[in-house]
Image (cartoon, rainbow, N blue to C red; front, side):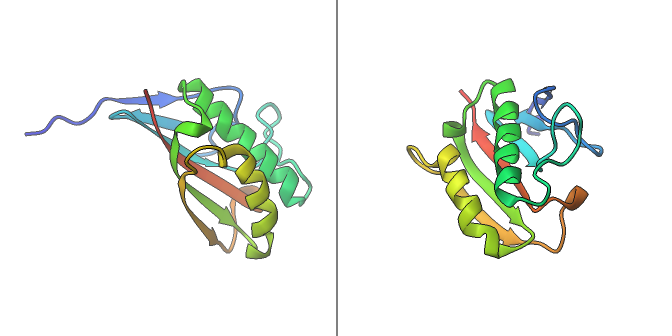
Length: 133
């Protein structure tokens, strides 16, 4: 019988607290699985950007980087992301900001999908998987 991998929850006050029964990230078997981040201000819990997808994307990436940092990782260790948009017409603007975070070196594998809605009325959400070590 194979033993289950040790799991470690990652939490930081530099990113928004979860709004449900999940962790900001979980370490397992040398990988970091980051939950999707939306543009919530970590201190107030309020959605930032007032509908501006670029402002939201900047906050989403800052939140994601804070979770990675808490686990001792950087964006360069991210190997997979999923980008959720409520409007694919925002793709180019989100992609330009995304490239600023993940564009150096080997960019992560990625999926980008349009969804009907995101929590709190957000326009963008991004999750990630990183290799640790």
